[in-house]
Amino acid sequence: MSDYEFVLSSGETVPVVITVRRGLRNITLRPKVRPVREIHISKPWATPVSVALRFLEQKRAWCERIFNNAPQKVRVVPGDEIEFLGMRVRLLHDGTRRANSFSLDDSGGAVLIVGGGADMFERRVRDFIKARFLDTVKQMIRTAPREFWPKRIAIRDTSSRWGSCSTSGTMSFSWRLAFAPVDVMRYVVMHELAHQKHMDHSPAFWHQVSELYGFGVERAKRWLGVHGAELHRYF
Image (cartoon, rainbow, N blue to C red; front, side):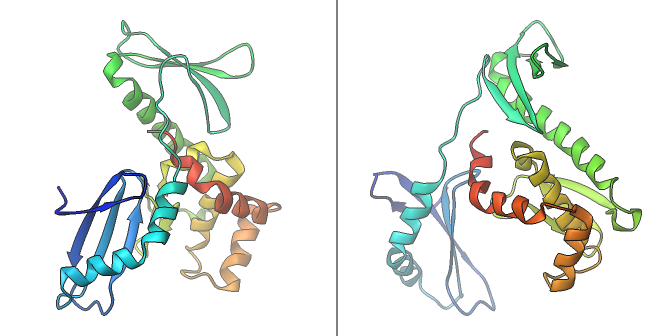
């Protein structure tokens, strides 16, 4: 539990987490709206907490704007229809089943029947989407030349990065890309694959992204910049 709080104009109380980082010269401020709403402050060891909190207050308008613009979480319940991985999926619940059942329906959409207790419904839907997302990422990677393939793929729930590529060959992807159009998801995959050749964002890197992705790469990139926050509305 945080020792400090920041009260928004709406009356909402946001926990403030303050950490000390040796070698840090300036105070850094990072509001987080997912998976939980918090404000993280990093400060040099010699800087008093009061100074860090005063700095936060000076940035009040900026923080308020971030929290006010963040999408509200939408609960997923039986009977809902949600879109992921390019499919519109109707969600149903059958407590007599132990496992989930997924199938295409006559309308061109899909149906996911979730088994288990009602209290596990949202978690089981989320886990199903994450598993299908990982399978889709692997399929997309296989469309690129083998020299770009990562050694390992990890699925994350990050708030500020859609993907990353480490020098050790591990690629990580935010599973929330499952809620983006498939071409946008593919853009992020090709973006990270391009880092296998260029661990920067130089002109050569962007040329490599374009070569791997093909026509429409700029459109996919723009979509993510405009609509990225919407991918966190569920769970």
